[in-house]
Each structure stands twice: as C-alpha cells, then as structure tokens.
Image (cartoon, rainbow, N blue to C red; front, side, top):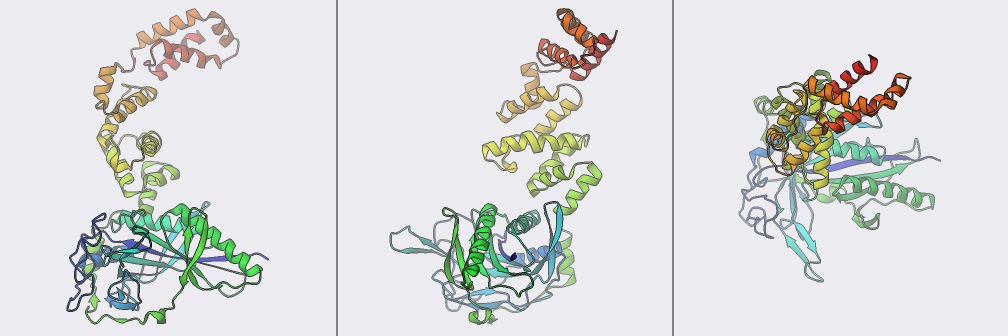
Length: 477
C-alpha cells in the first residue's frame, strides 16, 4: 500500500534588532563567550524585563506579509523546562496570545502553486548555547545568545514531501530577509528549521510525528526529511511503532538519531509571565508598519514580468534576495531604463557566475551597479559588441577601472564605419573565391564563415550587424 507523508515546519527567525528582546544587551554575532549576557538575561533576583519595542513592529510586518490575523492583545508566558544553557529555568514566549495568528504562504513546486497554512508566529527569547568537545569530557555554556529575540513561525501540517518542505522554508527565508526582519544567515543560526514528520496510510488518522531539530541548510532539510520518511515506513512495515521524539540529523552519515522524547504542551507548565504586562497593538501601530514595508517578492516578480517584459525565470532569479532585486533596479535606473532584458541577462549570467565562482554575495560584488551600467550603455550605443563586453567585464572584475577607461586603454571600440567594414568584407571575399561560389550555389551556411573571417580581420571589433548586412548585399550582387 502507498503511504502519505505529513510535514509541518517550525522556523525560528532571529530578529534584526541591536539588543535583546527583554534587555539592552547586544546580540552581535561572534563576541567572546558570555560577554553579552546581562543580569536580566541570566534571570538574576530582582531583575525585571522590558519588551524591546522593535520586535513588535517586526512581528506585525510578518503578519501583514502572511495575510494573517494580527494579535491586538499579546501576553508573554513562561515555558518551564531545564536545560544547562537556560539559566532562568524557563523561556519567555507567547502561548495563547501570539503576535501573528492564522495566515498563509503560497509555494511553487514543479510548476504548481500550493497554499500552505501558517498556524501562528510568536515572539520569544532564545536560550544560550551548549558547546561540546572544546574541553575534553566537558560541555561549555555560552549565554551570549540567551535573550536574543526570535519569531517562531509554525506552519499547518500541509506539506506532503521533502521538496515541498524545502520550497516553503526557502519562501519563508526569502520573505523574512526581504522584510529586513531577519538576516537569514543559517550558518550563524539566524534562521533555523525544525521539521515535524509523520507518515500514514491513505484515509487513516495522522501518524505519530518525529521532530528533526535545528537543521542549518536547505539541502540537509531535504535529505533529513527523506531519510526520516523511509525510517518511519520501514519501522511500521516491520511491526514497530514510531514514538514521538526529537531527533538530530547527522549530515556525515545521512541518518537521524534520537535526542530526547518530545514534551507535550502541559509538560511545560505555561503560565503568564508576572513580570511583563500585556501588550496592545492599535490600528495606528499597524498602519505605521505598513508604510515602511518594501514591495514583497511575489508582487515584485509579477511587476517585472508585466511591466518590464522579463521572463518568469529571470524575474525569479532577480528577486531571489532583496539585495539582488535592489542591484537590478539600481542597474536598470543607471542605464536610463532602456533595456531591462539586457540588464537581467548580465546579472543572471556573467555576474552571477563570477560571484558564485568567487564565493561572494551580490552585496560584495567588485562591480557596482554604476560600473555595470556604464558597460551596458556602451553595448546599447554600439561602442562595443556583446563579445567585446565580456573582455570589459573581466577587466572591471579585476579592478582595471570603469568600462570607458578599459575600452579606451585597450582600444576596444567597435568599428562602425561602413566604409572600413566594406573594405574588410571585400578583402575576405576576394581571398575566398571558392567559398563565394559555394554560397551563391545554395550553401547559405557559408555566410557564417565569412562573418567569422571579417571579425577575425577586424580583431573582433567590427559591428556584427553591419558585417552581416554588408556581406549579404555583396554576395547577392
């Protein structure tokens, strides 16, 4: 019999504030262990938390983007459990009154759009971090991360495959980074994904789920879920039972292993935090956030296709990150908004290729929008050809100056003088009489040979369009 897969994701997005959710301590990454944990973060006696107002606005922005219900009344709760890196013995979070209620996110998989429900998104503080193996046989506790503001985004169990789960995680990553509420750095733990995976026979109730914890790459999310699906199916078919537990994914062996049994909500003994008053959000608060929000990725993609005439593929690549979209729009503006397709082509091919090879993000590109626009302008005004432009691009990447400086220094200006090109064509035709006869005898593919010979004679600088035009005129006479 076939099996149905049921997946729900819990995503922890670290918010881009300067300080922690309930204290003024810094959340900067990479500081010396335990150098950024203040008395409030440690839960010392007499210390009272105060809500960082910035986290409220970031939560509202996510709710608007997800077309979700917004919690006008929010209550912070204590979730009680013991970890060595949770010095207070509880985590301050939101239970019954989250900042974001039910919403949705549309994903595309294999050319089809599927709507995935979002159950809720709530504000909470992060715990510290346990470092194993730094001192043999011991665990080091770094409390710098304690109190870091998070949004935990919980999906409905609407995902039916590892591919859908990755598409949803990528789309949510794209959204929170476009909004600027999370930097999305998975290596630093700013965007962490927990996957709840279960299987069942068609028509049967939901199966027992296992949670795959804190996977830090999209590729590993997919591989971990695929392994877990097979593990559960094999276990059930061999007469065993899936237990509700938290499992860790080992990327080296491509397996999951049990970490601990999964607690139920009542195990945490939630109760309202007595140190924090309820927070009320007004319509004015929501309107104030709306006016600061950027154009969202889906709307931007649709605009690029409808207004700029770009393909769905190009629009998708150009909106893969906010930095990429901003680079494209700045480039298009600096070229005088003349040819969006040419701008898109240079970003998605040559620039993207060079960045990938160098391991750089577009925000780190040595070729600025102004520099690339200068080169594209010279293509559009026929100063250089597309082929010569590749030489100019490489020189700009290597720091040899602007497009105009490189063109001048290397003598790369395209030959557009029709008289000069005609003279080159005459030389090539005179030197190749048998090929001319072959062309006139019906072998029209010889035209490409003649074009190549003229371009070679010109050092690649003759205008290809003019070369083709003059050759056809000469050969038809």
